[in-house]
Length: 305
Image (cartoon, rainbow, N blue to C red; front, top):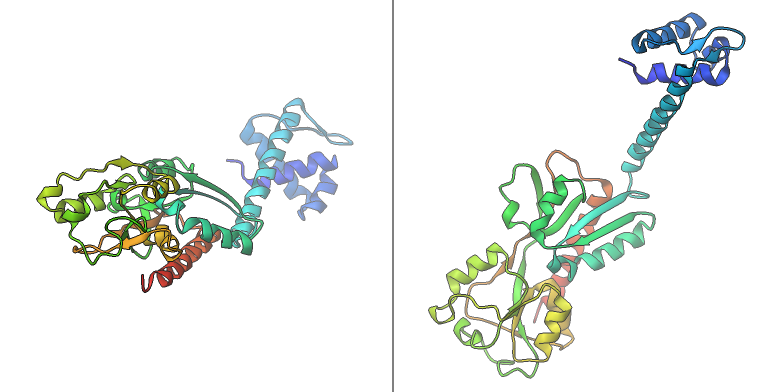
C-alpha cells in the first residue's frame, strides 16, 4: 500500500533532483528518504528514478509524478473543504424544496441566510416532494424541506421536524361565504375546491372529517404553483386551503378572507431531511435556524386573524 507520505517524498525528490535536498525539505535523514522511495518502487514494481547527478525520473517516474501531484492536490482540496466545513462562509448547499415551502418560508429564510453569509453558494430545486428521497440518496441534493409523511419510517433518513403549521381556508373578499361565522365542511364544499396536490396526511384528514355529502374528496383544480392558485381564488367563487405561512401575509393585506370551519384543525406535516449518519453542514444548520425564525415570525402575523 502507498500512503501519502510516500507520494510526498517522491514528489520532493522529483522537484529537487537530489535526495539530499529533498531530505532537508521533508525533514528526514537521507537514508530514511531513500528507504521510503525504495519501498514505493518495490510496491509499484518499477523504478522511479535513475540515480545520478542530478537524479532523473524514469519514464514510469514521469507518469507517476503527474498522478502523485494530482492526488496530493486533491488531498489539499479535501483539507481546505474540511476547514471550510467548520464555518458557513464559502460553503455550498444544494436543497430540495416542496412547492408549499418554496412559496412560504424558504424564500425569506434563504434571503436572510445570504445576507449574513454572502459567500455561501446555494442551489434550490423546487420539485414534487416524492422525488426528494431518491435525489438525496443520489447526492444530487444535501437536504430537502418538504412534506415528510412518506419518509417518517425510513431508517436511512434523519428528520428535523419543522414546527407544525395550521392549514387555513380562504376565499376572495367578496365571496358569498366571506364574513360568515364558522361553517360546516359540507357548506364550504358546495363551492369548487382548488388546491395543491394533497399529501397523505391531508387525504387522511379529509377522509375522516368530510361529511358523506362531500365524499369522495373532489378537487376541482390541482395546481402546485401557489401564485396561480391564489389568482384563481381571487377571480372566482373557488375556495382553497394553504399552510399558514403561505397565505397569512395575503390575509393581513386584505387580499383574501379567512373562512373558519366547524372541524378539527388541519396541520401541515413538514420537516428538514438529510441522510442518516451524515452530520448537517454549518450552512444546513444555519438554514434551519432561519426557517424556524421565519415560521415564528409568520405565526405572530397570524394572531388575531
